[in-house]
Length: 272
Image (cartoon, rainbow, N blue to C red; front, side):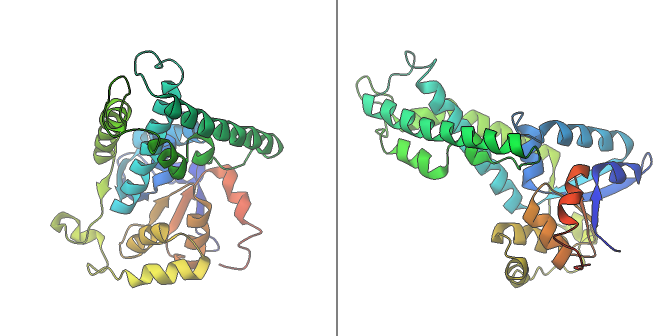
């Protein structure tokens, strides 16, 4: 093949009714599908609905993907909760002035990032969605957390109550969503043995994948798992995953939005 990248439209048109298709789904696809403010939410949601209507799709993922997805949702729900805390919830959930100051400080930083991102988006409509712009970073959440006492004291709400109020039930719900949506790849599952080329997954190969193209190690774990299976497709929005697949997984197909394919023509020219 001259390239292993295939757009949503071409992928959709490859299959007929009742065909069974196995595909590995990346965490960024799950994030875009379940977060309505994500810039790719509509295109991902529509694509998944369309292919589900024309074929029997089996989505597979890994525990690494699950961890990335749930950690994203953790930051999302805590960010939204903390922002609400200094707005509509300020009379229902009392917090100290130091907590209020800490939240407003990180919220102001987030707002500055959003302004800069809006300027970039106006110049480049294809600019990738960055959750650090929409939500607080992990270090900012920790910064706010340090301003809280752990438990409620007098008229001050503790951090554990904040987690119970804004995070617990929502994160558990998101976990149930993806547990229903995907099957988790494991060479130890007897019902999945036919999916694997080699049921002994060599995790050191993930290091080789990471060092070849410089992709994150968590992503290289996902790609490495794919390479140990007979599954032909991986669905992703991630630039590094698409790039690394062109270099280290040329026998697999990478499914991505149609308008993203052109971004790799010049960059990866001559690789395949």
